[in-house]
Image (cartoon, rainbow, N blue to C red):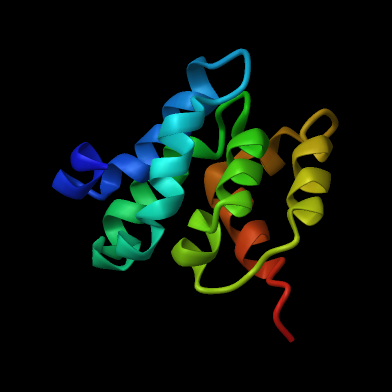
Amino acid sequence: HTRIREDVLRILRFYRFSAKYSDGPFDAQGHAACGALASHIDSLSGERIQTEMFKLLPQPRAFDALTAMQENGVLRALLQTDVRLSVLHTAISLGLRYPQTQEPLFLLGVLVASSASP
């Protein structure tokens, strides 16, 4: 909690690093701390969020990270809406046939467009 309060961007970095380096469950204590402080994400600039998301989305376990972010409210705090991750999962699966679908800008667009809100 203390480290995240020092720099809220650590919430997004936690998930990016977990998506890149973790081969098992994400650190439960870190995940809980990120969720508890998710409301502070609104203090980040759009540019900082975009940079971290562009780095997160192409990682091997990006979908796992986004699922974890959705479970504890971080994704909702980040996007200000709920999303259907199944739409993103489909887009990621398309990457096997269409590599251009793995571009971070495309994936972020899919994520935002999959808003569960009417």
